[in-house]
Image 1 (cartoon, one colour):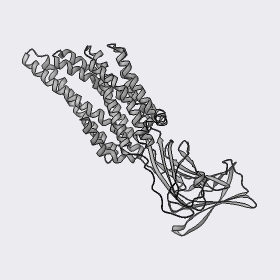
Image 2 (image 1 turned 180 degrees about the vertical axis):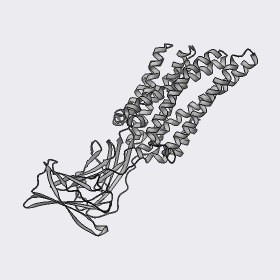
Image 3 (image 1 turned 120 degrees about the horizontal axis):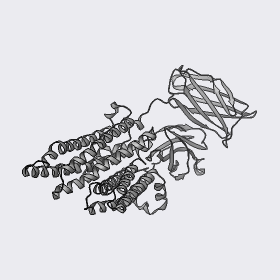
Image 4 (image 1 turned 45 degrees about the vertical axis):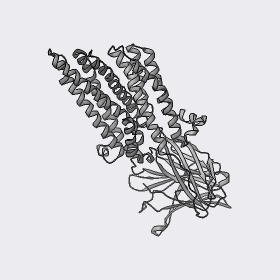
Length: 519
């Protein structure tokens, strides 16, 4: 059953692997652009903070160079390798970064220097197999937490001495956690399984939030085994298991984090409580020691917890979806609806046990009691199968970026970087309330220090629309910073910005860059 569910996840949701949470917004040079002068560095700007994993620069003659990169918040800077600076033709830059919620993101930027040429093929930046391996490892870890750590808690809560199988499952959490870190390392780096012998791969994986998830999950299992039949000890182990779900993934990266992380931890803890107590109840039903009084006490404890489970689930779904209309038409929404269907089945079975079977178990008639025990075995077994399906299914959420992460509202501003041999500029265009566009320019010299030129002039043109240069009135506001008078542009696309930086009486640096779509 586990293999079938994982296969279903791979078939239905694997196309969404390429949909990453961090999205590239602008690049300098821009995609498919032709530059007359090779810039000293490339600039990639994302919609959320990222960290570089690997940058592969492919030159027009087919050289593959591992380039360096630095990140500052949402901006990734890639210095042009020295061996690529003088090579005219089409360059490919294959980048791989990790987004704020721990998901790897990959893409390729191509631009041409001097003239276009036949581009070499970019190396694969990642495989679907490595993403599927992370999902499988996460599913296995979910199951060992549920039927290991949580079942040991259930045995302590319901005073069940038979706990050897739960102990075995708890110990399996340790290799499951290591397997998750290994699979994630392969996914982050996009490298083959043989790379597991490379310490650098493990170092990369261990520096991520998912490694903390794996560590806390393993610690919860060790604590549960060490606590024996102690209810306080196993309760703390259950809390740690729930916390592990909130340390990485969608909930860890969603705002407001002060709400989402506790909601995720509480939601996971209650779900594990439910999953861990069911095997204990089934064992009692099978050996004939489960009483109506015990079932009634369990129901009274479980009912308020289920209410909290549903409430935290609604809160998290509302944040991740961003609106009820996004439940339909997205892989995330489809997966969520399947999960809700399975949870609905669990609730129906729990109601049958509480309303129909528990009273019969307390009946005076031996025949009614026998029939109730037989039906309880079936319903409790069915609940466990549904729990297994849910635990495997929720691992698949990693393949499906939530709609709130994929939403692409119109940008409030456009930022870009212009680079020349003697000067460079950071430019920002933003839409004012009156509809006019405000433009600011920060000038720097070739070393990145503030630049105070003798003069700065600028213009905007739209060659495709036949609009010649519209002069910009740029006034100096601070050291190296210039602001233009707001301008009205009739079109949102096709504009080209030109800045003429008069460095001294004999030297002018011209910076020309096509603008992305304006806000």
